[in-house]
Image 1 (cartoon, rainbow, N blue to C red):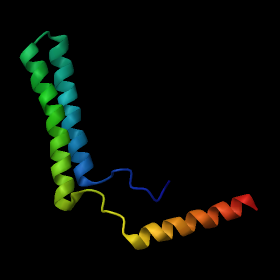
Image 2 (cartoon, rainbow, N blue to C red):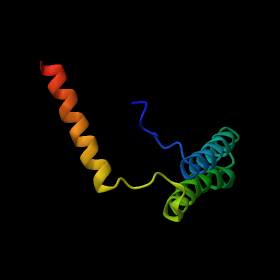
Image 3 (cartoon, rainbow, N blue to C red):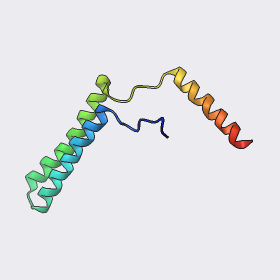
Length: 86
């Protein structure tokens, strides 16, 4: 597990931060019974997803796994399974 990034990239953090702010805005305006404010917050949630996706396409997300990395991962998994099974 320690080897996984779990989305700790600039694209992920930016998208989640914008979406979180949108969630907070929508929540406040829902309690205040302000429909336009609620929909503005909901739009911010969607904007966070779009911004994160665009940033990932720009190369600021988790890089794609190469064939060599996939093969090394498969070999390591096989070796670990062999050690566990005896």
